[in-house]
Image 1 (cartoon, rainbow, N blue to C red):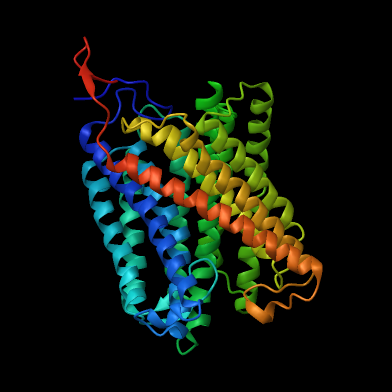
Image 2 (tube, rainbow, N blue to C red; image 1 turned 90 degrees about the horizontal axis):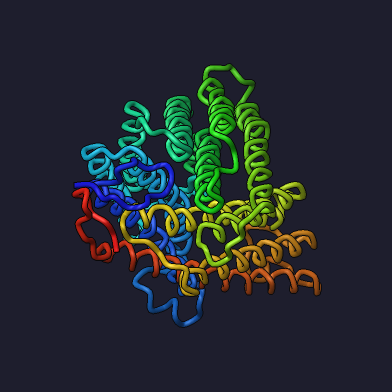
Length: 463
């Protein structure tokens, strides 16, 4: 029996049945749960750096710190984003076997990632995009997680729904880019030379596909803007045809990725530069076009600051734009670079927060309200992350290096100290916003749908 409620745009006109809702809920629990795991690992990281407290940990803190850092990054970005892709693909095109089977694999993969981390096993490799622990179980976890997400993505692409819409087109384009990223990982693995150091090996394997994962994240971000804009303003920021063209351009920009591995570049540096150029050529235009359309829609109104959809949309756009501006000044050796990408990542996170509260929870018959408690995570996280990034930018402009801590930061001027103080304050606010979001999301996802009554047409109506 289907549920006849006012569903967000992009879903089947007759809604999600009970089985589909349970599967989508499972994917979202994995996504939000990965943030909870990342938060717990961050707490362990802080404890491992705290005098006296670090001696009570069940592991030697010197060896555990970098391992926990790797797992924290993987759960807060890789698992969180891929689980959202799996959940959105399942919601856009429900499939009992693809959705449930993929979910089982994804959960198993996430569990495998934790085993060597908590066992304090494996050498940490802090390579770009997907840092890893050099341990068979960690690699197996990544492989099983990736396979789990493939299942609902392929189901969506091979059996696209008849109702189409912004959600289906956007998630479908993200799915194609995800498959291209996996092909890049596979080709890089086959081409990687034997006998190199683990970090250099992992850097080669994850560099190209990691770049294409940024295309995936961008496609999901723009999809969130398009869907949230349609919910907020009654009309999507971009017309259906413009949205289809933009998604096609994004996919087209990612197509050269696998081809690069068939070109005899003069050394590994040339291949790295090819992916870097692809990133800078293919990614800027789609967010600029969609962002301009969103700003035009915001200017027309209405502007409901008590709506999770509107708040998530606007704060996401502002923070992502801040990341773009900061990126123009980034220098790889100082904290201006992490200031840039933390702002961009924060923009994606805010868009996902809005999508979960305003779009996915209503589709699961668990709608969020517009109470202050629902809006606080957006304000705390958005403002805190902006302050965090601006502080890092100020400190980096004064010469504070990235990936250093303590005395190595060289905080010998007022500008450096002020910048890092802003970073700490903003980080604390962002963490508080993240905790509030995870708590509210898990509470709603884990609860039963609201009471329903049978309507005259025989369907169910939420009340």
